Length: 474
Image (cartoon, rainbow, N blue to C red; front, top):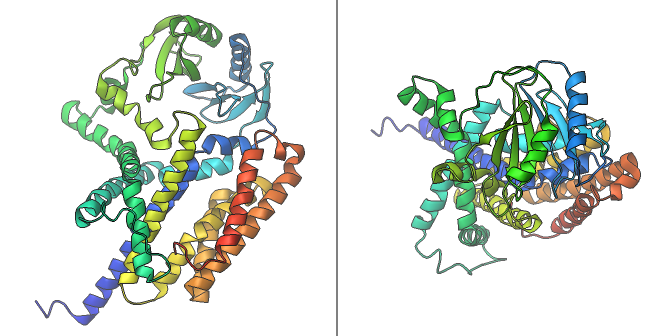
């Protein structure tokens, strides 16, 4: 056996172990930070296009007018036409098909094109890591499953973890400091972390479960499995005409007066099989919506049963709001942001503890510093590139991360790298705010943008102040 463990094999194995550990930690950190920001994706969408006409009250007749105008001028093949209705967080109306989306003015006319490109980059980063969707979703969900194991094993591996819940040794030994931050935040946020991990694992692994169940019980028919869980689509044969979405919205006020419509979808538009599906929120419920279906003439067909069906069906349809904190209004989102940031810090300090236990310093330490502090820099640079200059944010994000890694390797000093990246991020956010104000003028201080811009200013100040401190998460 000793012949098998040659010095060369041991050295290569240690290097592989380091890279795997760094990769898993990086994925966890990137997913947690992007997901924490994505809680406010609606606010970011408004911020990207602050000059859009906003309103809460709408007339179903004007929604019908917008639908007809859009459907008769956008004749490319599409399986769906969606109309997003105004909500407290996003008081805007959008009409879209599978290819493009446009805002709707309050008089029912079509406004400017919807293009929340940076927000889409952020959400896609969290959901798919900018990989092909199926591969990315499975990888992110597998990370969620791994997080479940880390949470449970962490409690089992530390019998004193609850007893030491308020023990925080700062300013001394770095390994002890990072360990205490990691353990304290892990204990305080454990219920939230577990909810995020379980629901996150579900999103991607559900697709694999559908495939397995379909092969086992339905001869590979995945549609049959989906129909069993979410309800089969109605089978209709009717005149191919423009759907009467206005009548469907009017009738919903009688059918379910206590609900709040989120959006509606015309499935298979301009065909004899088309039908209208209105997704309506039930206040006080965690389910994403109840889905009310109508034929092309706006006649009621029934609902999907997410509000009163089997408990398992209701639970599955509640995962979205639980994962993203879209229930209970703004303050629940704010709580999710705080707890999400704690999970991000837990992810970073976990790697920091592992690096400290190695009892050596090499390029892995530098790469990690460049990554941890490079992600905020890359997000700021991609936002400035996309919103101010119209440069693709996805490419800019990854190019920026390569640049921060190269800078950290060049400096070969974690403290200097951290300070440099914090200062660069603060300066970049300030430049973003200046460029944003120049581009949007008065809209930069309007209701759609003022909140985000104010927070960005505080973040810039925070980064500048943080770079003056010796205690940090990297």
